[in-house]
Length: 208
Image (cartoon, rainbow, N blue to C red; front, side, top):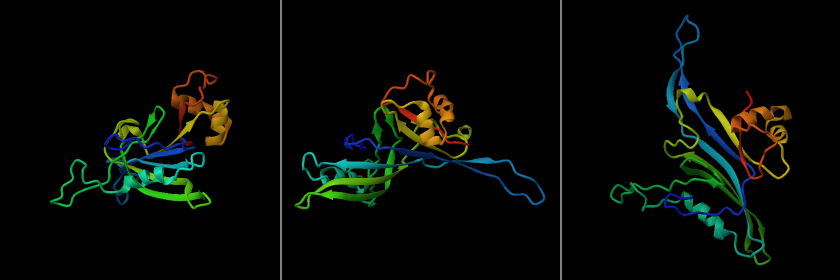
């Protein structure tokens, strides 16, 4: 969804979505002394990376009907709040990625790689893949506040449960061992590991 409320359909859910949030810490080095106490320097903007797939082979419509909207998210929009023709101050819009009940923080598109993978006999592009990077635009509590108690840099991943999947299989896929299912259960507040609804989004913790 864009800043003005426009919804851009993605046709297919991504297989993965990667979220990273970072807090800054530093300590002054003192000659002849040991390790100094860290002091908090503030939070850095979070980032999200994902790959979107577009396919219009069933309708024959140009896939660019969808991808051009994604490209447009990197173009300057002088109608946005804060824009001023006098100072030549303008920017692209911020966006939020929605996936079921899941949504990212407000972010701007930092980079976009678009590849067209299939064409009709007449040269109409019918299949494309867009790899995107998003950077947090402002303070947002979608994933909780970034503050000194939120810990050191920690990557997050999101997994959408498929029919027949179990927590141990999800753990083996993302964490490398099925016995790590308890970490996922604790991260997502799951009391019954057998009650796993298809379509549910799971936050995948890092291994430390």
